[in-house]
Image (cartoon, rainbow, N blue to C red; front, side, top):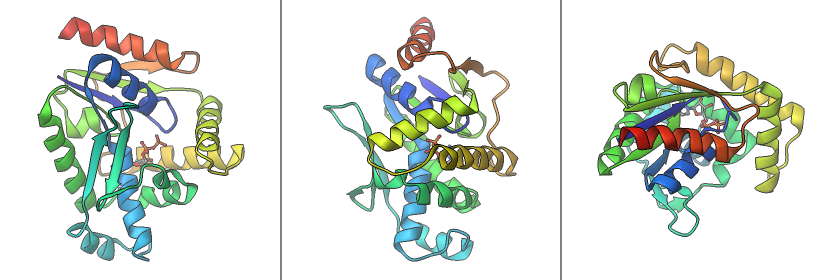
Length: 221
Ligand code: CDP
């Protein structure tokens, strides 16, 4: 079974998908982390985030993998064999990923990888284009939304927990900028699939979100 969760930044997709993955024994694939890993690769090689030609050149020499940590259920992201799960969350990478993920060659490579990884069994994936482009025939599609201030507060808390410094206004601005650019790009824009189920998480807990999705999965299994 393929479960797709799309939606804007900070709407609760990753935390919910991870919990559903644990509850249902589904593999959780964090596609945003893959684009972030490519942005990190760009930075580590001293390439400008807008330098399309050199980013494409880096692609053939890049290995991105995701592995589920058996103890925590966390999906860890590896770049060229190194665990980069934390360093890809910095404001600098959040800023750079927007341009990197718009490159057609980057998207093709990562979408192929996402489809390949999904052959392993039951999977839940979160991102921007899962229900529209990666898996238009997914068994269940969700589109998560939430009030912008709530999303910014949640993201700030997450960053604080990871020891990454940021302010509320900086985080809110980043989310608004990315939402706008992700929605208006021509290649795989952020938009709900016609057959997706909307979940407004503004007043919901992670547990409630996960239970809602889990119940629908159980009905389909
Ligand atoms: O965690 P957050 O929602 O802030 O972002 P993310 O899921 O880590 O994704 C980071 C960025 O990657 C997004 O702002 C999108 O620009 C891009 N992305 C994408 O284009 N397609 C996806 N399937 C996932 C992420």
